[in-house]
Image (cartoon, rainbow, N blue to C red; front, side):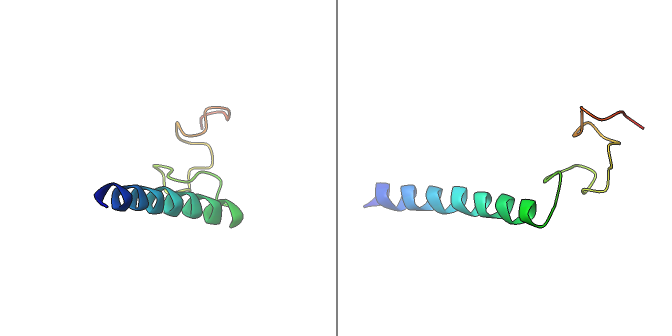
Length: 53
């Protein structure tokens, strides 16, 4: 029974994280978890393909 509860808890955590990412991408958030709070516009290391300003 304890194994079942642990598996269920892990599935809820992973599912919640996946739902959060999906919801943010649907809203147009480009960089989820950006250290600049999503306001970086290419100024931080989370956008390596863009030139650093």
